[in-house]
Amino acid sequence: MVWRFIAKRVAIALLQLIGISLVVFFLIRGLDADPVARIVGLNATPEAVTQAKESLGLHESQIQQLANYLGIFSTSDKDGILQGTLGDSWVTGSPILEEVTRFLPITLELITYSLILAFLMALPLGMSSGTRPGGFADRFTFVWGLFAGSQPEFWWGLMFVFVFFFLFQQAGWPSAPAPLGRLNPFLTAPDPVTGFILIDSILRGRFDVLYDAARHLMLPVFTLVFVVSGPIVKMVRQNMLRVLRSDYILYARSAGLSRKKVARYALRAALAPAMTLTAIIYGFLLGGAVPVELIYSLGGIGEYSIRSILNLDFPAIQGTVLIIAMVSLVIYLAIDILHAFLDPRIAF
Image (cartoon, rainbow, N blue to C red):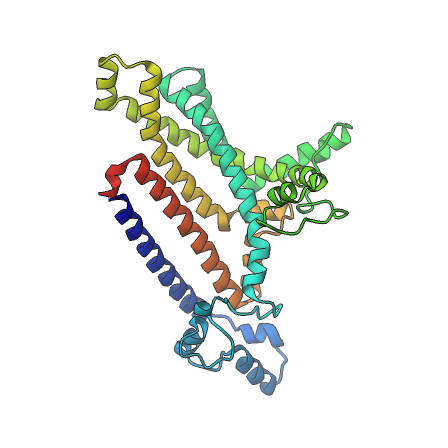
């Protein structure tokens, strides 16, 4: 039954991806903006404008442009999505897939480590808070959730830079590196294996790069952990409280099961909503970590997407949205499958 649920979720994810692709394609072309004027300039001759439109494929109908984009009944000599390409950037001329795969791992590395740390911190804190309501951990969780989740990440990013880089450096203490990218400019990143610099450094035996990359990632990760841990810890606490008051837990207690065993049953039931929330935050941060990327000059997919929008680079916008949507859907799918194994009732 679980496998049937997985097959149904995969089919739904594919339909969602197709729907998102079509909506983004037509929404972009409905914008009140002229990408040709942005590329050739406002003083270009009519001949130059016509030539630019033809080279970009904008002289054809939107249906034919969609066919060229998908790679079905195409009048273009270039491949489409179904042939495994996302087209070329109108600004840089480079393949979109190549550019996205250069920027995306930076953002994935940032938010993956941030959410793993936030979840690992929120889990014991939320459990302790939920099993001992009114205690010190419960009061700390309440204050932490209100404090961390009520302020924007860019403000905390700037504060961390000011304290851990500027003030520490002024005081002569060991300070965080300057917020100027992922690596010291005198170091070269190892040849990519996974695209994650920390993992690739270990795989390539470049421990000098590993140390420097970890230091550069420290403050951005702390910024996101500080902000996103608030809602996760509150979710774990609320779920623990709800589960501990449920009938089957009360029955387990009355049957004489140990407190440790009862807590383990309660945690299993409380984990699923917290993991769903974490997946939702992950999908949000794929495009929403832009302020943190800008503050620390990381150059992730968020910065790339903003630059593409400002340049009216239609293929880059479409490709970025499609890849981000695909990663988000894979994350949601993985969480749903994990949820189904934790609680098989949802598979029916």
